Image (cartoon, rainbow, N blue to C red; front, top):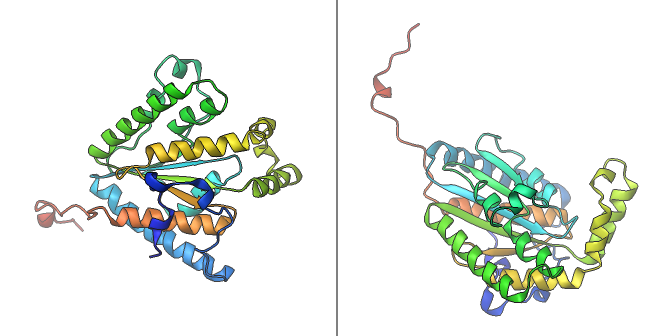
Length: 270
């Protein structure tokens, strides 16, 4: 297993500028070999997810954050390609509805967290409430810091009640985002993904980078660490997240539940 700690955010010495979005160090240098490795990792994740679901003891939450076109959907498609849908669930968070706005900002998040034996993937998350809202000055610095503390408390509670939390920031460069946006406009199979609003957010790129850096520095903890995932290379992104998830699953005490003594005496009639 590669040294994954180099991608883990250490709040005491973290600067997003120290991470290169173009990094491809998780790749082997051979496309066919990369594909085989990704398939192998996906198979291992599937095997552990099967035990996780059967054991029904642990809960796993993977959070994916990143700028538009950073590859959140692609990550889900490839990392979990071998997994049985049973025991895995996706929750996507867009602009809050009137009902959600009538509650605290964590209300819609809390009801989507995993139950025992389940992996839940957040495509965007509660971090939108310290990212886009801060970039657009819908909250001030005091409120933002208050939310950092609330998020840490929320994630600590999840961790202390049996949830393994893995948070991945998909680090794409502004140049690569432009390439992917052009692809969306020119490819009929991808045009449906294009949103003109994404261009307005792109104009605030530097503000978003600062907001992401501040958020990760304030909320990367021992119980809910952030990982910066170089994501200009889709293959590198998928390999790295697969390795991080697999390593995290291996840290759990996963085992199939013991066979009931009653089952050992059951006879199946001809």
